[in-house]
Image 1 (tube, rainbow, N blue to C red):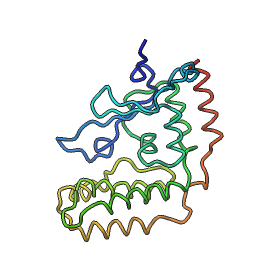
Image 2 (tube, rainbow, N blue to C red):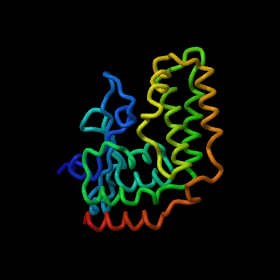
Image 3 (cartoon, rainbow, N blue to C red):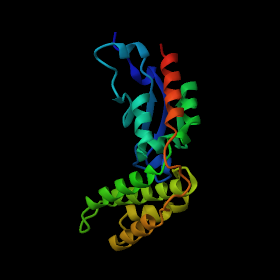
Length: 216
């Protein structure tokens, strides 16, 4: 019998993207990200459960819980922001437990992951013909990462920056000004800040063990 990992084993589903950031327009999609827990006995087979599943809804992508935790421990920006999304559409007790330990994933690795990803994306943009939507989201990523470094959690809602960010998206801000904004944000990242040197892997592993036992 085919296993429907999503939605049958989904423990957390959130909205991300422009609608979560407060940067949506009339044409914006609803981007959903989720976490599912594969039944533990499936790991005893030669063919293991998938690490992620796309769909079944449009613009929906879900990670198996172990893969999700691994990415979060590496300070993957997209995964970390899922844990702080202001729009939670579905959550089970296992999902609530995951949200309860979200700070255990945090470490100063986020300095490198947020700035490194934004820098890599910026270098792919053509200054002569920039993709303004992508430029906006890279600036937004730096704002989120800087807030994380300073205050210990990523900034998802961009209400205080909405007008300026949307002006970037519309191409109303010069490329030189976008680059200055980028440089200012990157330079503002603190050397240590509010984040611990390493994540709390023990707490995360305890959570994973409990989830696997419950899924027997």
